[in-house]
Image (tube, rainbow, N blue to C red; front, side):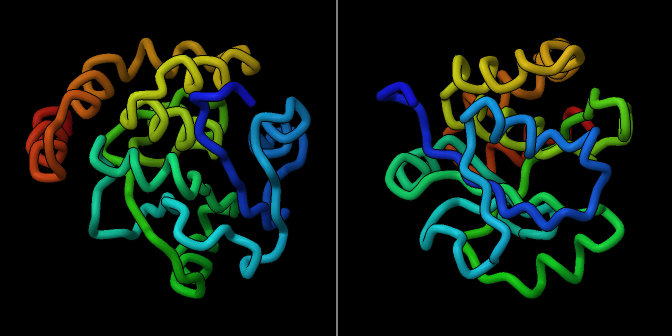
Length: 170
């Protein structure tokens, strides 16, 4: 891990096709630390959740630098029940469009890799985000498809600013 890179964690629940699993590929490359037990999620880390009322914003960078960034890798079919069973410092991603082959074009249904990359980009760690996505054939297209919203979210001064920008892209 490079000095300025954030620590990345994934709670991996083995609910999806292993051949299409972006979390496992990120772990194979040494970019994330995988956990299989929800009690192992690092305390205080920023946990990405599509069900959080708080949107991630550049102001979350300090916490992420100290505690890390966590994604929960589970099936979208079971997501609601899983997220409600976990405690954490939850943040949701603003409106983005996935380019992964499974959920291409379905707003909000990002892969674990896309979610981490989006959060990193918004928090100002663009190079780390690009590094993550470079290991997927379709990865760089995530930034092409979402360039305008990601740039706008990364420049936001507050959560309210992120939400205002988000409304422009929905």
